[in-house]
Image (tube, rainbow, N blue to C red; front, side, top):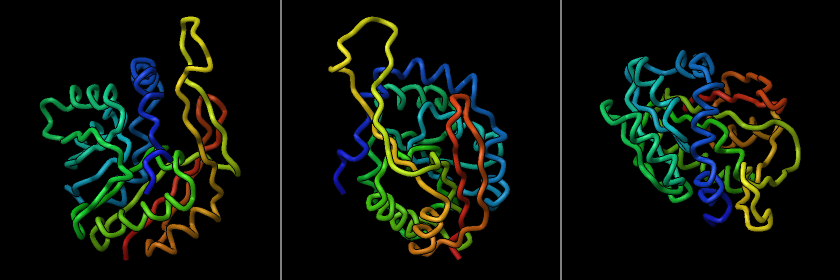
Length: 211
């Protein structure tokens, strides 16, 4: 896979402090409940694009062990600080280089990180996740819903040269397209949910099992 598809670490490094504060204020453990309800007790969970590690903290409190992968050095450092005493492992790397052993996780969680991947790359990553999830294990993914894609530059409070700001590209997905990709990989879609975030963007949750 070409890592340039989701090499957005400069974008997140520049805004890591702002994102950290935003997530602490706006994210809720309730968003994880549908995923948690499908996990086996004590399951080991892989969080792809774990950000500041907040979702992993809630999973830990719910009795699950975990590993987080985050390409932004600043966010990975924040996540490591959050989990200094939990035993949750945070790895700083691009998850497009992901290589998993057969059935090593009971669940995989991806909160908006898959939206940074075009369809072909996402399909390949789902195949890797399928290998790494146990039979009966769960994959949960939240993505931006819609069609097409858009690019956005980092937002800074100080006046800077906008042409030099790092960007990220967001890909929008329909329920039909996502369910097709999960099905083709071998997962069985069990549940679909939706919500609107604080910026008015539509998000879709896909929960699927390895049967």
